[in-house]
Image 1 (tube, one colour):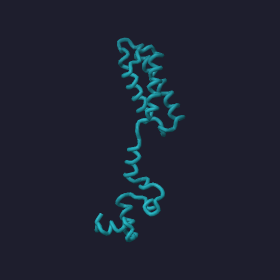
Image 2: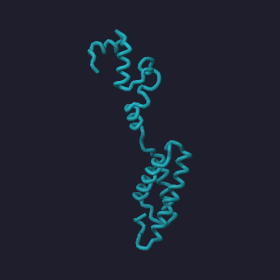
Image 3: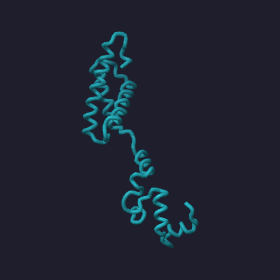
Image 4: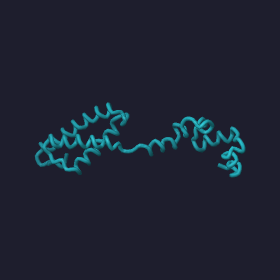
Length: 143
């Protein structure tokens, strides 16, 4: 942005008011929501801007509660099929389920949708474990 630093400082201190050309350039350059810039209301960045997308991605983390619930379900499933429920295996399977949920559901925060998808994924896990157990020479590790 080519601007005299003193001019920008004057805007920031309130000594002078920027013109419309400045606002238009600022919006294009930084994807700033002009409503927010002028009034202080609303979101700082435009919804479809790379900055808002980065902000959304940065705020997205692993749902620890969901991972814990998945691990509990994996442990129960392993016990049901009479396989050893070692902590490492439970953790790996829970992480696989979580990743599959991220690919499957539209909204990972929608508990009803997640529960419905989890039920199917646990069924598929149980079926896979049972098939691996039944296949001669395949062993439990191939599941």
